[in-house]
Amino acid sequence: MTASDIRGTIVQLREKSLLWRTKVDFVCEGGTLVRDISKKKKMSDIARLAGVSESTVSRALADSPLINAKTKARIRAIAAEQHYAINRQAQNLRLQSSRTISVVIPVDHEPRQHVSDPFFLELIGAIADALTEAEYDVLLSRVHRESWRAKVMSQNYVDGVVIIGQSDLHQDIDEFSRQTDIPMVVWGAKLAGQNYVSVGTDNRKGGSLASEYLLERGHKRILFLGDCQLPEVGLRYQGYCDAHEATGVAVSADLCIPCSFVRESAEQAMHKVLDTKLDFDAIFAASDILASEVIKQLWATNSRTMRSIPVVGFDDISMASHMAPALTTVSQNIYVAGASLVDNLLRQIKGEPVVSEVIQPKLKIRSSA
Image 1 (cartoon, rainbow, N blue to C red):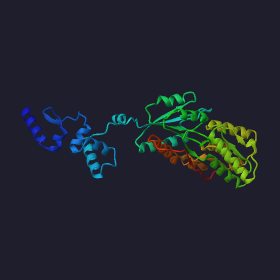
Image 2 (cartoon, rainbow, N blue to C red; image 1 turned 90 degrees about the vertical axis):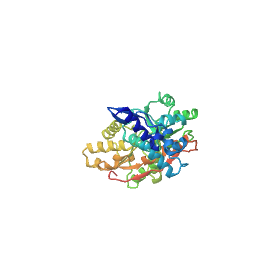
Image 3 (cartoon, one colour; image 1 turned 60 degrees about the vertical axis):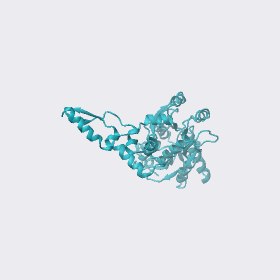
Image 4 (cartoon, rainbow, N blue to C red; image 1 turned 30 degrees about the horizontal axis):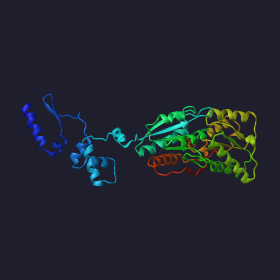
């Protein structure tokens, strides 16, 4: 193809309004006329093609209700044909938003709970799903007491923060919330006088549901396994005590066994219980992971009596229904919890008033009790 032929072809193409409006560039490679796609399309190009303003293109691609459906569809079709996508970084800079939410797990008590803990994974997954639907990214951090504040403050490019679990940092979180205007929501118990906004289960009611269920079936010596120094677990134990009081059964102090949220701690606690031949006829564990380890230890005794002891957990993680035996547990409705955390935070970011939310627990009865 000669230079004259190339010029003639370009003239013919420019006579077509679509290509004339897009200012398509052409290059000659090996004697063949090809389109040069190295040049990125701009919003102004899409606006010319659609015969509208750049602001209309921006609104249409952002799904603004100000643009009618027919116009949106036409603009989006043109954008797709031209391989155009909004520059999110530039858009976020204009909006003074990073479209990123920091999810922080402050773990202080020993032994430290891992991010791989099934409850954390499921709650983080629920949060990530909800944020994805809202077109936000997730930044995940696991931090210690000494550094969690500095970590949050260093993330000045995020739009808000979700803190998963109060651990034993309630006072520290509350103080921090009084000193910052960062949109923040905490997964955990709603405590008297707290300044920060929280979303969490009614732990006291959940503890009562589990304990009432066992007491109504004639069990009088229910072992409670968990760390009552942690706000959520402390409330679950209060519910345990409430149920005993309501049914007229005395609470025995020797049946409250301290245990952190990791398998190793539950294993050690159960070894001690079994070695000392503590008298008990049922077990309420403060989490499903603890309950699963309890069942494992009971079955390891090879005692039919031990294997028949009913066990109730707390959380209702996915594995609870697939265990053998399937675990009776108090459901926190983790997926709803994650969506509620995100909804609460995004409303804060928009400047809307928010209040702490308490999710009502439900007892899921299965084979373990």
